[in-house]
Image (cartoon, rainbow, N blue to C red):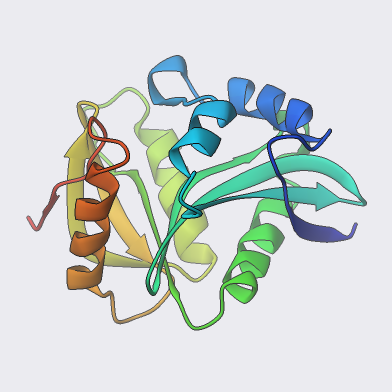
Length: 181
């Protein structure tokens, strides 16, 4: 199976399929519509990258760009295409798509007191297995603690702080606040 990435614009016909994947992949409290995401990237800071398997759209990345930071805000693969290696291949392609940058993402921090801790551990392990490194930094928003991971061993914390300050101008109600434990 061939996996590739392709930039998807608001008027692309594949966007409708990505809308369906978005709706199935994220719970309502964590989901933004793709149209809202496109609107929030009107200054060119956002790219929607479709994940294609054998030329069919099966998922997407939403990436916010800021200087040398590429913030992986959303990553979804259609439920019927998961556990086939597509996500791992797509993540590798993403790091190749953005050479000489840091790709930063967040995932729910493991917490044994949470009912979805096994899902949290699976997500964390997925990123770590695919070359991401836990930075030791955390953020808290939407009543959830997130662990921050990076594609590079030297996390540019100050650059990420500047990115979050910039993000505040676009999405004022969804701003990660960094801290260490």
